[in-house]
Figure 1 (cartoon, rainbow, N blue to C red):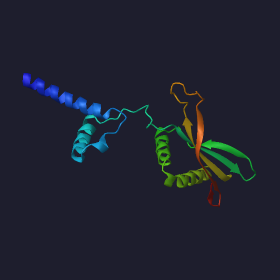
Figure 2: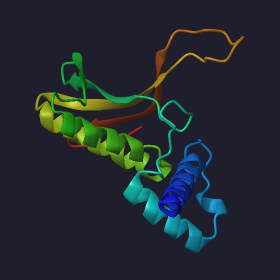
Figure 3: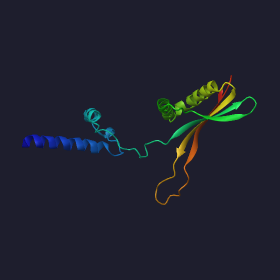
Length: 166
């Protein structure tokens, strides 16, 4: 009975040690020997001990959005957003916005989103696509507190029957 308790205490201590190792924002995986990392990854994936708790850490990206400025041939324009009431679709849009962080994909995504908007608005002559990121005010002590705002991080224009532009 005492041996079983001791074994259980050791197992709990090892589990808590693994959880504590993965809990901070600092990734430990690059510093572990490959064999140990694979074993810890397997155990951590099964038990949940490998979860990084960085919900409010700098690695958590800001909210982003896709906005369209749809222009008709007569010069009138309206605004639209790439968002739907469907949560699953919005998750997929969020995943595309993650890919926007890759410089090699930005132009293709801007053009694809612009062509999508042209398909949604048959009377549009051109669509300007803007990607914006929500910037929060810094929370550091002593830093000036500005109002949160949307910052443009990408823009592209697609014309009906024409090539994409910047």
